[in-house]
Amino acid sequence: MDHAPVVDVITNPDNTADGTRAFSDRADVVSSFGAAAVAGYQDNRVAATAKHFPGLGAAEANPDTGVAVVDESRAEIMRTHLEPFRAAITAGVESIMPTAVIVPALDPSRTPAVLSAPIVTGLLRHTLGYDGVVVTDALRADALAAIPPERMILDAVRAGNDELTLPADPPAAIATVLGAVRDGTLTEDRIDQSVRRILRLKATLGLFDNPYTSSRAVDSLVGTAADQETMAEVARRSVTLLRHEAGVLPVPSGSHRHVLVTGWGATAVPSLAGQLRGRGLVPTPMYTGSPDRGTVAQVVAAATRSDVTVVLTNNVGNDERQRNLVEALLATHLPVVVVAVGTPYDIAHLRSVRTYLATYGYRDVSLAALADALVGAQPTGRLPVTIRTPDGTRVRYPFGSGQRLPAPREG
Image 1 (spheres, rainbow, N blue to C red):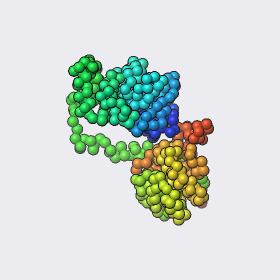
Image 2: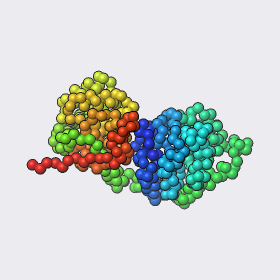
Image 3: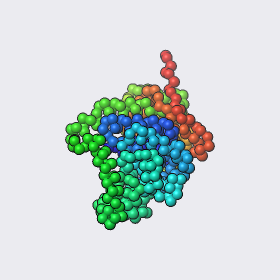
Image 4: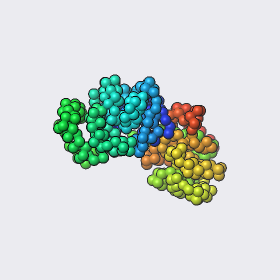
């Protein structure tokens, strides 16, 4: 079983819960990709989980670390945020995960969705007709911290959930359920409903006939050479060029040009430097995170000794220090490439950037694809979202945007 895919429609660029796990800000795109992901998992006998019901993409906070609220109307939620769940259900998804988001339009009591009978039983079970396994998001989330543990467990069961994920104290949670059945607070029939769904899922997955695996079997099926190549191809095809100042890219491989690699990512910065070294360049890694003024000055000084600077960013809208670093580097008028290694929205907050790429990831596979693009591989990615100005009033880069590098001149 895998608690994926995320089928939230990320309509709020400031969303801190979904990030690059979300497919798009368009319901039809999320529905298409979500259904394909469900098929991909389940065609290979892995139960998929569509999350985070009833949609987390319009919230700003992450329920794991704060109180997340969706203030959209019921009509908008039904039209936009529930469509990918409908598509996942049509695709036969084996599990759906409600989360601790507050949605007043669906439950005026402001009960978090994962504990809400009107949302889990009323909307998911009755309106959408879903009879698969419903598994809660983490019950130890900060958004639920103010709710007494026993009440939380009982409310989760009453709401219609079949599996309770990560309660703060699992033995105490089990004791709460058992005690509630013994004193009649919960009926055995209610427990049996969930048990039947879980046993049905296990039977579907063949876990009664073949319940065990081995490390050898795992290694033969997971992370194979074919898997690695698929990931590499996806990463290569996703790299998106949104702005390009003539003459900055490509940096020819084997040219031994000096490249300063700096910015966000304690592992990403040295990893990218290593990738560039393997392509015949001379990189200098300078990880900064969220730098103070002294660190910015050191990076700017290093940039003056380099042929080009590559600065990695991640969520600069909430990090003034990252923005200060980028602006200071751009003020030198030296060749600078800005790369968003999280969501692509950073360019909305960096108006003077002249060369900008988005990779949607900072793992090695994405950084290898980035290194290829920096030395001349043609970026072919297209924006899966619309990027607006920070106040949301104007579109800066519409859905589907993406440039290509000009063909090299002959001679």
